[in-house]
Length: 272
Image 1 (tube, helix red, strand yellow):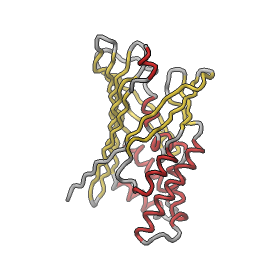
Image 2: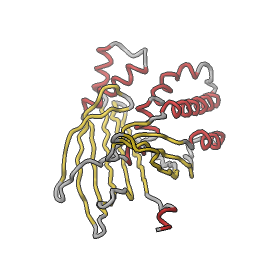
Image 3: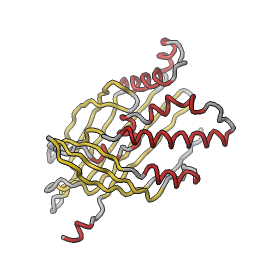
Image 4: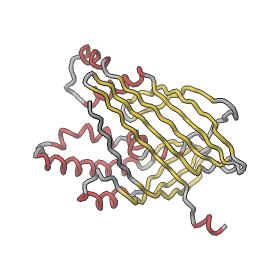
């Protein structure tokens, strides 16, 4: 079996500002300025993407800084939906299959532009940044726990297992933390089942569908390493690696994704 690899990337600068301090919550703005767009995006759409997706994302965190949710998700959903339709139509026209393409893809658009998908797929850098603000980690060994969370593809909460290790603390108080997360196989299959039944109305009979699902194995593992200042809680760097492997009777496929977030010096820093 031939192995195919592809490397691609997007680069943008985000300006983060606190808009308001609410009752044990913060209201924040994440302003995106794209610097480099993926080669996968057709050149005809790049200028439009910069205009339509260089957006202000308004969201909330709790008083400790943990992500709660995007507030203006309906506005963002409309922009992303329009972009997906333009992109799909362009690809379909190139393939000579443009008839009724929007109608056929409507459920797919809805799934990708839901509140959960925007938070954990389209703008996943934001919850990636705003996590692990309310834990105490032992200076030796690791801490393991199980928690529940939603996913873009399943309406019911799923169980995750997480392991957190303190790697290092330097003389200036900069801590290096490693967070490893995995999802149980049964939860994986529940997610796949929910998504397919929701978005594909013509699936086979229940029994046949469940038998086919047994032949599929889906593994998702996530490793996040971050450097955070022990004194003021400011994150200096995050490296977030995700590996998704799908095992099918006819072959296997693995996808790797890395998110890197780095703190840039601001004008306020330069005046100190």
